[in-house]
Every structure is written in C-alpha cells, then in structure tokens.
Length: 227
Image 1 (cartoon, rainbow, N blue to C red):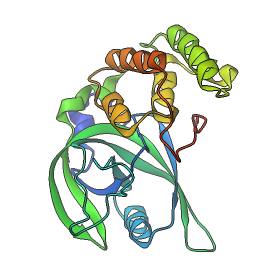
Image 2 (cartoon, helix red, strand yellow):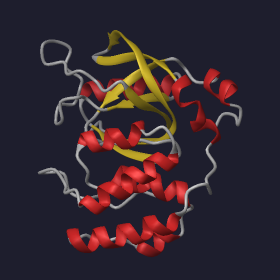
Image 3 (cartoon, rainbow, N blue to C red):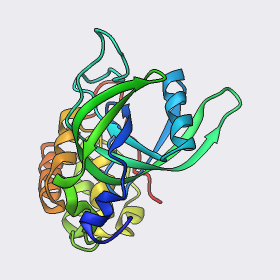
C-alpha cells in the first residue's frame, strides 16, 4: 500500500485510469489477478500503462459476457464500483500477446467516463468511499468459518481445493482470494466487491457458499491465485 493514512494514500493514486472492463474478473485490494491480453485494444492499454502510470481500472460491464470495450451502440454500461490495480509484471509473448499480473490497490467509484484513447475506455474515479481499503488489518477476519464453509461448498459442488494452501493464508487474504476465485455470477461478484467492510464481505460470502452458487455456463472454476 502507498500509505497507512487513507487520505495520503488516496492522494497518491491517479484519478484518471484506463478501464479494463471484464466480466468475472474480480480484483480486490491485496489480490493478484493474472490476465492473458490478446485483443489489440487490450494490448494498447497494457503498453500505455507500462509506459506511464502503471495503474488499471478493473470494472465489470453490466451486461455479462461483453468485454466492455465497444465504443458505439454495443458499448455496455459499467458497474459504478471497480478496483484500481497496479501492473506488477508484464511478459510479451512471441505472438504479440501479453501475460500480465495486476495487484489490487483500492476500490473506487466512477465519477465519469473520459474520451477513449487508442480504442480503450478511460475513467475518472474517486477513492473516498473506500478509504478504509488503505488501513485494513490483515488479521481482522477469522479464517475458521471460511475454511469450514469452503470445505462444505466444495463437497456439494464436486470441486477440489488445496485446503492446506488456503489454511496458510491470513483471514483477509483468504476472504478476498475466495471472493475472486469461486464461480459466482457477475452480479454476486459485484456485491462482494461493493461490500463496505471486510466483515460484510465475509457475511455475504458465507451466505453465497451456503446457497451453493454454481459456475455460469462456460466459466470453469479456477483455483485461487496466491502470491
């Protein structure tokens, strides 16, 4: 994090961010999100971010399945809350693709959309609603009920988890890793993202796991990425 003081930390983040609208790619503060970037507009975005501010606005389109980059009548609306990610690593592949990893820094609200640049959308954002993201205590979340719930969830859904790996995480990292990786619908992921506090996010996640949400068609389960 930039600083333990919320006002100072927020002031150190750019308010204008290139937007990476993508369904079912949930980024939360402290999480890592790997992306395989192949579309020309996405590649333009990555190149510009690597050359300048190194931050990206991850945000979901309101229409699941659309990538959010259309700039005409197919341009989907965006959810108003997303997460700023720092470009942690970048590897260019021989075929022109980029393999990138983003680290979640802080959530934001969208103030307004700016003029697009090189085919990708741009946003002006405000971090004030989520100032607590800069001072969350990694040990504030009790991992015990999460581990018990994910074990039950896995048995019902026929999924396999590395429970030893999950048990090695502190409560907050475990909570955010499960929120990002479990196969919930886009609207449920958005609700987890927008939860005001880690405690509220944990309560919602436990409810969703007990309800036994299933993966949307064509979206297989992915084991949580841990760094």
